[in-house]
Structure formats: C-alpha cells, structure tokens
Length: 258
Ligand SMILES: Nc1ncnc2c1ncn2[C@@H]1O[C@H](COP(=O)(O)OP(=O)(O)OP(=O)(O)O)[C@@H](O)[C@H]1O
Ligand SMILES: [Mg+2]
Image 1 (spheres, rainbow, N blue to C red):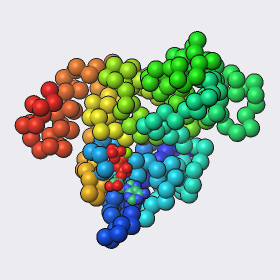
Image 2 (cartoon, rainbow, N blue to C red):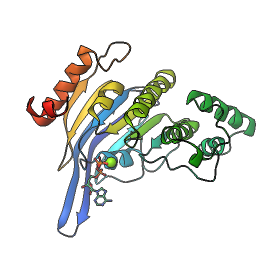
Image 3 (tube, rainbow, N blue to C red):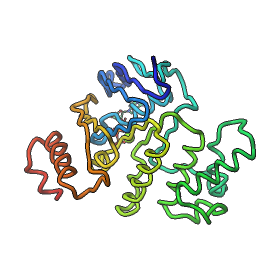
Image 4 (tube, helix red, strand yellow):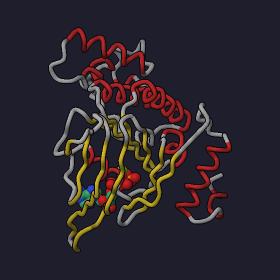
C-alpha cells in the first residue's frame, strides 16, 4: 500500500541535446523517501541537483525513469509538491501577508485562508511585519516569507533547492533551525539539495552524495545526531569527515576547510 506522501525516484535518467551530441546529466538515480522523511542530497555545482528536483516537481520530463508520489506517477506540476527555489521570488508590490496568501490552495475559504496566513506568519517568526513589502525586509526575512508561501499550499512533499545559499552564516543557521522545527512539527516529506555539507548533515536523516558528469549517486549515509543536532558534537564531526573523505578521497584537503 502506497503511503500518501512517500516518494519513489526510479531509474531517472536525463540527457540534454547539445550541438556536439547529448549531455548526459543524470544516470540511473534511485531514491526512496518514506512518508515524512528528510533527505539531503549533496553534490558539487553542475552535478544535476536542480535538474532532479525539477523532474520530481513535474516541471521537466525525464529522458527515462519515473517519479511516484504516494504511488502515483508524476506527470506534471501538482499541488502535492511545494518547491522553494534559491531566490525568494516574492512579488515586490505585495505585503508579507499577501505574498503568503498567494500560496494558498485555489478556492480556499477566505476566513480559513486568513487564519492559515496568520498561523504561518507566527510559524516563521514574522509577526509585526504582516504589512511590510519585500524591500522593507532583510534577506533572511524574505526567505521566511517564501517558506511560509510554500507551506501555505499544504504540500505533502517539500523540495528545497539550495534555499539558504545566498544568506550569511548566522541567518543561514537560524533558517536551518527554523526548517527543522517546521519539519518536526508538520512531518512533510522533504528533499533538500545543497552543496553545503554541514547543512546536509544538520537537516537530513540521510545524506545522499552525488558526483557529476554524469550525475550519479555515490553513497547514501544515514545520519544519527544527538537530540540538539549540535554542530560541534563528535558525531557531527565524524559525518563531516566521512563525507569529505567520500568526495575528496583523503584528509589532506580537509585541512583547507577546518
Ligand atoms: N535545460 C537544459 N538544457 C541543457 N543543459 C542543461 C539544462 N538544464 C541543466 N543543464 C545542464 O545540466 C547540468 C546540471 O545542471 P543543474 O542545474 O541540475 O546542476 P546543479 O547540481 O543544480 O548545480 P548548482 O549547484 O550549480 O545549482 C549542467 O551541466 C547544466 O548545464
Ligand atoms: Mg542547482
């Protein structure tokens, strides 16, 4: 029996036509996410992470393979899936509450919609900024509005494409905690793609390592962190080393990062 919000990525291949022949971007990608699971995919620029998310979201059709959500084959965009892009993509002339309301399901009862927007504003810590325009908010606050807008559609599956890449280190850590809190409460099946190894470990219950040309899955590492997900724990450091070694082969280059 298919669980409503489980995701099965089966034998996904993606080739793009190029003047010199075809560019093989993804080769035989297989990932199963249980309902409510949080999986991080980490890999270098160009390894096909965004391409994979676009296929899962139904924005692009793969050359081969299929994606199932709740047992149903993805054949186009669906309200079951919420996607958060790297840029916030807010409407500049809309206030915080209007931008969030923009993500509500079509035809939702007005009163219910207003209540949902109010709850979401509290969830992402933007109380007091309901009437502010994006230009009056910091980058981190704009990101919060974008998260709330994505959650407004009550997605069963949340896709995060390097959502915090443009933020400073402090805001980024706050946002990661925020996402973790939201996920723990709402238990939305979540797939995050990032090139930030710490972010992948901090958030994921599993980290999928991808390597490029063509994009393939190199390894899958289950993550078990102490309750507080402390970034300075021995466990965290162990995963950090394991993933660095997996990508770079030795401890040598790690000294450049720590
Ligand atoms: N529509 C397209 N047509 C042709 N090539 C494409 C298309 N979309 C992506 N590519 C190519 O596919 C490869 C993977 O791109 P993708 O955007 O998925 O990488 P990524 O892992 O998300 O990288 P980044 O971390 O920089 O965002 C790149 O070589 C890119 O040039
Ligand atoms: Mg990308």
